[in-house]
Image 1 (cartoon, rainbow, N blue to C red):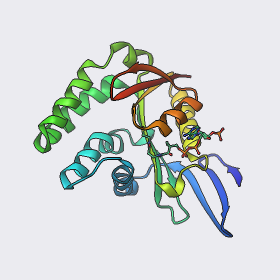
Image 2: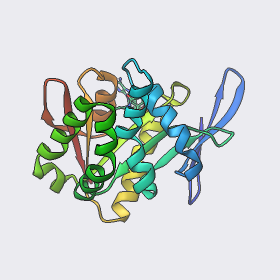
Image 3: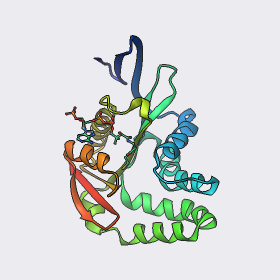
Image 4: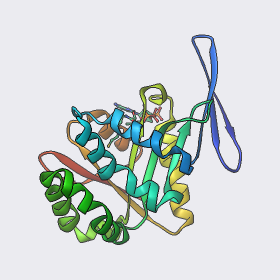
Length: 206
Ligand SMILES: CC(C)(COP(=O)(O)OP(=O)(O)OC[C@H]1O[C@@H](n2cnc3c(N)ncnc32)[C@H](O)[C@@H]1OP(=O)(O)O)[C@@H](O)C(=O)NCCC(=O)NCCS
């Protein structure tokens, strides 16, 4: 495996089963939106009917690709198709304001339970988390891009980008069932800030 660095992207060349291909990390582009939605749905663990699929993208995808494009990065395959992403909001107060105005009404139309759960999360999230760790992220890679160092590269690309903008801390939510992701975040220096029976909030200062 070789790493190539230039100003805009990080490329990783992989030789696998005598097939040589390149994936690279680059900034999100508007044309990636549908692929990011597909990745969000494909990597979510639950059963999904049509409403469930729309809910997933409303809850975990569209805010970031519509309102904070600059804070989104993708892993693109050799045809430049996104096969993974990291998407981020850099400021919890702004996120909450826009999410409540634009996305909660759409979520309410599809599922009152999903609406209520998200409303409670938005309005009970510890003020200290939002202040000390104002940014938050979601990261998802299709199987084809997992376990090759791209997750780690995406996190470090995002943190470098946020540091340049003066942001100094980030948080994320992860289900307690997702043991693999928890180990991954711990390996990258995230610690548990808050534990609930179903999920934890993990944080990192930089
Ligand atoms: C979780 C996920 C983002 C990790 O990305 P990845 O590209 O597979 O992980 P990487 O290859 O970059 O691994 C980075 C480091 O974490 C370590 N790591 C990853 N999974 C681990 C595990 N289960 N236990 C211990 N260490 C682990 C790797 O060994 C590696 O360490 P190294 O740098 O010393 O070699 C990715 O697998 C994924 O998208 N999974 C499905 C969707 C998901 O769960 N998203 C998170 C939702 S909260």
